[in-house]
Amino acid sequence: MNTSTVNIRIEGPDSTIFEGSIASSPRNITTASGGSHLCNGLNRNANSRPGATSTTALDEVACRSNFTFDATWSEDLDDFFITRIASTSQTDNKSWCLLINYKFSNVGGCQQETKPGDHVLWAYDASNADHILQLSPSENFTSEKGTGKVGYLKKLYVRDGLTGQPVENVTIQTLGRNRELRGSVGVSDESGVVFVEFEGNGTYYFKATKDKSVTSNLVTILAKGP
Image (tube, rainbow, N blue to C red):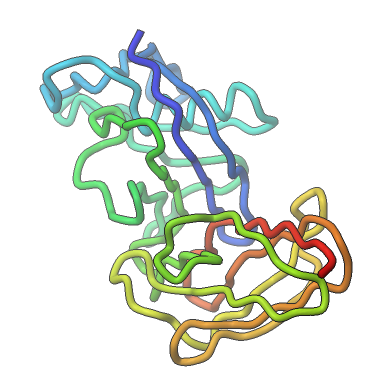
């Protein structure tokens, strides 16, 4: 059935609307402004075989969560154009953008097929952002999960996902169990490094934020006593 499980994140102007893993498959998608159309990767003959796409992943998330999205349909492009996700709609100079593995997609969401493990990012006004922030507990950015020791400092790394360059003066925010922002715990240096400390055993959640930048992915650290 050409199902694909991806990591999908939806970053609104003020908060993360959704972040997690989702499986989707080719399907008809219906929106109030665009009607019902098949979204299967074969749109505009972009791929040789049907498959799950960035827009089917968005549709699956919306079906399972408490938000909706809207999109117009372009006959010329044979694709949807996302105009609203949750309560945030496009304006004359701000729109929803699609990035795959931290790179802007050069095709529409129904043409952009996904592979298992891809990072799909729908971000508001990303085209005008100074940085697309990426956070990791690994210097090589190979993971979004890590471990730490209580009472010891742990390095987190921040870079621009588009360029791969470290970003300084980025605020690292800690999140609660329900992923609500609880406060800042540090600021990255010129190497994109910030140190965090764990006061007790448990799971800690972090995101990187900076003015005029797209908020980072979630990093999860399991801290244990020495």
